[in-house]
Image (tube, helix red, strand yellow):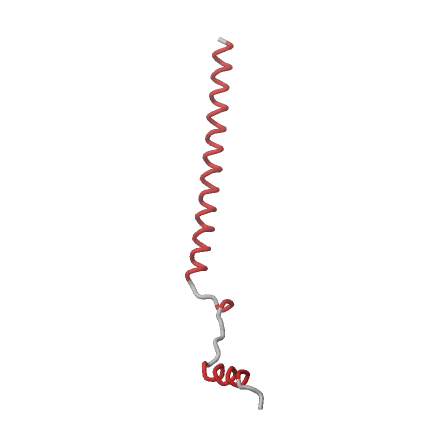
Length: 72
């Protein structure tokens, strides 16, 4: 009878550990999904911090031609 009680106690303990690990895994998966959703949402909308200023092409062409002219 003692062996049966010890075995039953071991099974309950393992079941409890399994439930705890499943709960922890579910929380981690939820946090990961939330993080991935935030990253996806942030990358989907344009950010002004990454905008690039492109000058007019006329001013670039004029500037380049000044530098490329041979000296007189």
